[in-house]
Image (cartoon, rainbow, N blue to C red):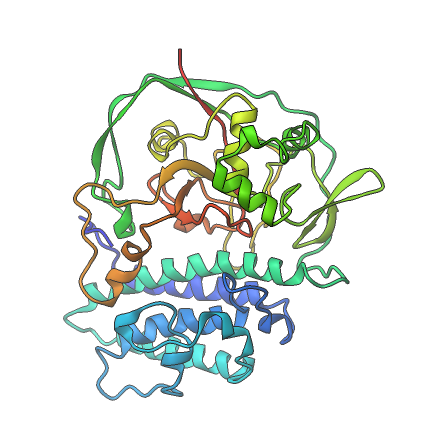
Length: 420
């Protein structure tokens, strides 16, 4: 959390809390109890765990330190639903979350209700620390928004192993579209400032605001499409070691990558598994579910490169945040990339930048200081948001980050190149 000149008021925080919790419930509503138990790999977590963990966050960091007579429905939940906060106590093994059949879904729902009622009582108590609580509630809501996106992508990965290819949303196909030209805009660079300016919520890793030198560059007006990715595949892009970082090529060979995650070929056409079940690959939608290694190889094949996060921020920070993003509780959104030329939404865009601290970065004291700082190694920054990112969460300085081999998130790319 960065200090803000105009922090969110308690009433605003309560409203955000209600909206955020409602959206999470709406995302889980179509699921049966068996769906909510799926854990397909260590990187993913069951829906039920997401529902409980986001609740534990409010309980652990806001309610317990401030309500002397508070009683949790079960003190053992603190172990089951802690994620990685070492200072908050012991944690259940991450890769065993899908084995926790109890508490069942009804008990997790009761836990959410209990914590929500307790937090509402706390915030309506006219306390001297109401503003401090409001800031923590705001952080907790943004934390839950992150888990809303994870809930969707973890669920998609889990469902993809089912031979019945089940649907989460109505299997509405995308209309056939025309190929879109690829254009580039030029930026003169120079000494620029990036990072959060204040005036709204931001995570600690988005600051401090600082100066960066940029040489002149060009960046494309849309993400790379499935049509372009198929051309890369047909040109032998996955097997041409000259295009790949050595480590990336080794991973691609070991994992037998020959196309984006969830793709297969059927009757001469490419298909993909989506939240709407099996769908023909929409040629002019942004390619999605590709790793940093794949994105970097494609950029080299296409005669370009990936933008740095500073280039991405400078190019698009004045563009209003509207696009194919997750909506509110009763209008979740498309939850799939759509053809078009949007900047925000559709797919997170890999950058060439390491997830590293900005100059002068200092994590907050206590367990909440573990939120971002401890992950600043061996990961890459992505920018721009995706079709599963809540709109309320996004801002030009937002940095998400993943390991370069990971593919299950809504990951794509946008090309950049040096300006002559």
